[in-house]
Amino acid sequence: MNQEIRLRLKHLLAFSAIVLFLFFYSLSSRGCSEEPEELAMVAEQQQASRDAFLPNHKTGPTIYAVTPTYARPVQKAELTRLSHVIRLVPSVFWVIVEDAEKTSTLVTNVLKRSGLENRSVQLSAKTPTNFKLQGKDPNWLKPRGVEQRNAALKWIRQHLKRSRDAGDGPEPLGHSLVYFMDDDNTYSTELFDEIAKIEPGKVGVWPVGLVGGLMVEKPVLNRDGLVLGFNSAWKPERPFPLDMAGFAISSDLLLSTPEAQFSYEVERGYQESEILRHLTIVHDMQPLAGGCKEVLVWHTRTETPKLDAEKALQKGGKKSNDGMEV
Image (cartoon, rainbow, N blue to C red):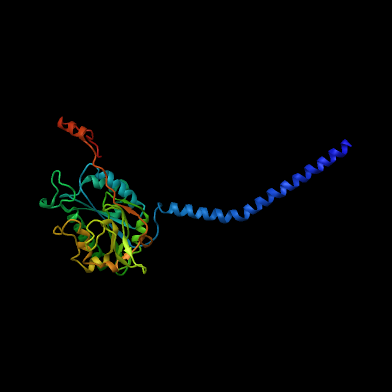
């Protein structure tokens, strides 16, 4: 009797083991059939996220990034940060223009350390004294960067004409793009993929974050994707109420319109409108960045450092950065 019970128990255990084996085998088989597709999808999403921050090796038009800069405690820090973005985008050629009588070793050293000597030009153009901010003048009192941006435009026009006349331009018409890239903003490398999409004869536009008293200033599009205007809250009556970081220009427009430049004679906030009025109209601008729904640049500003202790040192003829470039 006991032997019969033990035999039945063995059969039950064997049966249970077979059922469990078939159950787990079924699960694993189902998982194997679904897993590759699911894993591929996850891997593709992860790779897309990584690609946004990896060097862009795609071929495309040269983007001339114009950066006005001036000597101040945070200058090297901001140019260093900006250089790291430019290093990741091989299609960018950096045009740095210093507000000075001559170029500085500090900016030269930034270019050397970042390996951008062959993808940049270092210029200088001093702001006239009567247009220079004095003492505790607020930033908005006088236009900034006018002299430097105009010097950059002059260099770019001359450079492109020489390349075109020599027949060694990247394309028959020397298609390239110009972007005014201030050193205190924050840029995603994705922005330059968008700039590269700008067609000859066009001005491209996109949203800018944290500017004009809003979380975002952006072009407003109609159902057909044409630019109707902008959602600007600050001086919305401007012909082009957008930030300097929110547009780039096809270089053929600048070559055919030599009068397009910046001016000291326009009122506050009209520098963008001053150059764009020569080049395009609002409805003809080319919207980018996912139908102007993606923010890829932010109008950030570096806080002015508090250097009271440094000033006290200097009164005694000393300084903490003696013999150092900060």
